[in-house]
Image 1 (cartoon, helix red, strand yellow):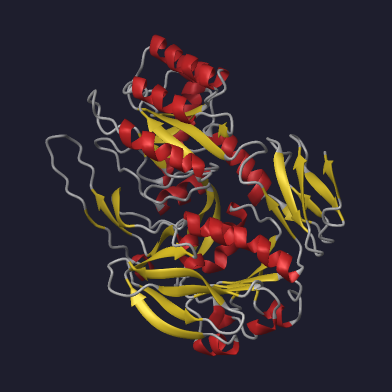
Image 2 (tube, one colour; image 1 turned 90 degrees about the horizontal axis):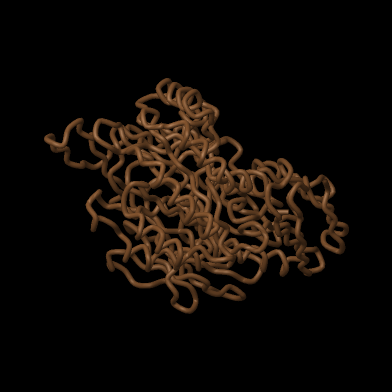
Length: 521
């Protein structure tokens, strides 16, 4: 079992600490044998046989008593000393991280962004300006980090250097086979990417953005090694449905009416390529016949919203249902003239209270779908809303040459290679030739070609809805599985077993934690 340890009395008003939500981060990467407990349960022995994940080390006493753990940084000096580590404090605007071989793994930095008031007319100019939220947690503060000096069995695993070149490359992560100590706030920054400030104007761009997906993957993969070395058990769900190593969703923003012939042409290409798409309709451009045809062909209808508040979002959803007969499970924000644009955390809150299942995130490369993070009483909490990965837009303008085909043709295969959820966005009335050529290059058999609805349903069931039985010998899913699912089991005797849960199963019985597996229907 993996246990995320949280402070006994979290201080309200300190939204900066997203690390205590690390259970959500681990589930995003498939680890379902995970729970979150308050620190007092560590002292009564409830977690003695668990891999401890410690996002707030200053609030977790006696950590050295545990056989296996991951500690987020910076680490208090007294704890570092008890572990036999010397830590030297530093500060930088952000860090560039590499692994033992020098391979770049990403950047750790606090996000900063610009917004703008979207004008109502092309004759009006609206320049972007820096977003400065009311809560200090949204300020792009520097990263506190530590250079960690190894001793004994400890050895460097990751190195970091300031993004601006103002400091040397130093060890920022140590491990001894069973334990990992981070000298940087990796869990905090990674989990914080699923949060977004409630913007006061439409999102324009990030001026600073963390890039932690490959770091997250690195850490998630290390957990298996830690479990094996410490003779602890665990269960991990495959990144994507069985037989798939990445996922692709085509997102269409239906901003302008298209002809029946054009719709037929696109759907014909998708049938040939095995591609599935999600179509976001503005409520004043939502022909019932097109919605019917899209759904009959196995695609999805969602809401493309111009709402300025929660009430307007609900009204739009109701109107779309009346006009198309489809109850939208999610929405995206329209950024055209006169619309409010993407408002970040406001959209998460509105979508949740409107009963939707997913929203969107911009400017943050989540890699895999994640739970949105929202604020409750001054503290961050995970939402019921799921976030697909940020989209890659093919369209730069409506001009014939106003597309990003060359860039996406280079970047999209890399995203597929990394195993990400690749979302390609296009307006269906423009750049169709480029879209089909791009899809022909990336819609491979090992890529799950799915709608947002498909992706969110499987993620919610197999990862965020999964639980481990009291005897730790079963994994139960939140609902019958909508797709075949690979389940990897780590046993207390250091062995690994892999099995596949078929479509429709509600769980797997793992006799002896992996000696024999049987689907539960």
